[in-house]
Image 1: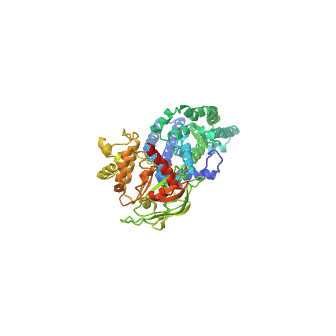
Image 2 (image 1 turned 135 degrees about the horizontal axis):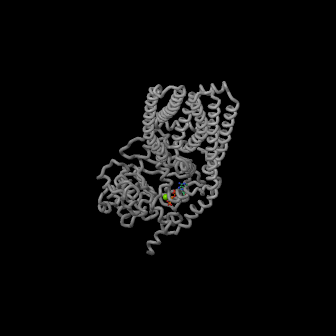
Image 3 (image 1 turned 60 degrees about the horizontal axis):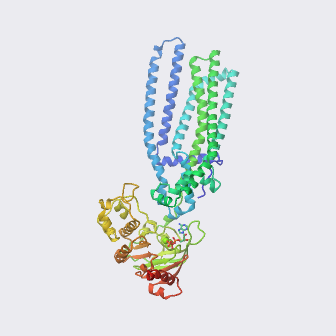
Length: 622
Ligand SMILES: Nc1ncnc2c1ncn2[C@@H]1O[C@H](COP(=O)(O)OP(=O)(O)OP(=O)(O)O)[C@@H](O)[C@H]1O
Ligand SMILES: [Mg+2]
């Protein structure tokens, strides 16, 4: 999954073509006929252009031959009708294309989001994936993302049809000229071609310098940070979140923010100036040659007209076609590299979409059991987070008996949460195995396996949707059950105060909803775990934010909530673990003690005794 970070490095023509084809293929999968319509529209437009030119040629020749306008009338009328038809067709296609693109664009945009929602959790957490997302963000930030593909494909098709049209329509005159070739005319043509080539080479050079500035690989951390927009994103989250403003105010973080954003931006100024200078030069070299070409075309026309070798109509025809050939060639010289660059900027997105899934390889269906006889065993499990140096868990072996209430205690960073994450298969261990009724959990269908667990994570997430949907995690739910679960989690009284009840929106992101207190939010998270009736209930510090009364209430009802399910309960308040059947003590990634509270306090040399005593002191002294 090594991805290209420097978009200005040299790529072979074949690689460019490969990139373009890859991107076009995805667009085609989203809309089969988009580029077919685009091509058709370009064809109609080119036909309109040359029909108009040929009509003027025809009329001029008629007039020059001394015939009245009347003789050309029917041809003119027919051509006008044709032009009208072409314009109409092109207009209709234009509208259709706009509507279709709207859908393609949105689908494309959501592909990454969908991927993030579906990909292996462990992969999201992988720093490599984070870098990729940053890259995607950058690749799309400087341009208009997939839109550039549409623009430049349209441009390239239009230029190709116009070029072909100019060659076909101009062919008779070109042939005539070559046969009776005058040296002056051929020399002029040669000079024009040279100027075009030189101009386009210089234009490309400055364009490249500009691109290097905009998309070059930042070498140092400092350069990376210089991308001020990125810093704002890192500070406030890519979705600007009002909740993050508190700490900055209270800690007077303004200067720190300025340092990470404004100051870096200012230091970037000279580079910006240099870039805009390059952009100016690149523009000049894009326009200067076309001016020369226009002069040259008229010079040749004048020579031809003076020489009297061609009819007036042919002169017009020649001038029109020649001018189009040069201008479309120069358009292509600009648009093709732009198309290649546009496609190259989408490679990061495509690579991201192609990240392979590891978690979903298991095919074994999960046995549905009404008796909930699911036994879990950790067999010498060791685990390290992606790219981490240290193991978060080391040689963990333990068994979860059916219906058992297990408490896990231990110091910060001792691996408690990690154990939960492995159990519900957000990550797979590097060593050892976790067995469900004797079968390695990796063998089961991931989707079915994860249905076994009701979890309140330490960093649980609520959505800015209505309360009821937060509890049920669905738009279609049993209202009575939701209310019961909220009551069970101690939210009954607060719920009664809400005018809209379970239809009240949470937070202010979506609608002007209620702002929950930390403890209330935690109760909603608990209610959610109750609503999902799963055989395992995993609670990671579920009462950390609750007041003592609420916590007491939850404990009282805990048996009712958990019933005969197997439960794991993590808490730093040791006194609240006493009601569990068994307590496991984690320390520095290892499972160092197991037993009931009574057994563990007996072991005076043990970690549990030490922790218990430290906490007890507070209560005794207070
Ligand atoms: N996503 C992650 N990536 C890398 N390392 C991590 C990640 N999450 C946790 N760790 C590391 O793994 C170790 C165990 O963390 P874990 O969250 O399991 O601790 P914990 O026992 O739940 O602690 P706490 O009591 O603070 O919740 C810690 O050293 C932590 O720094
Ligand atoms: Mg934890």
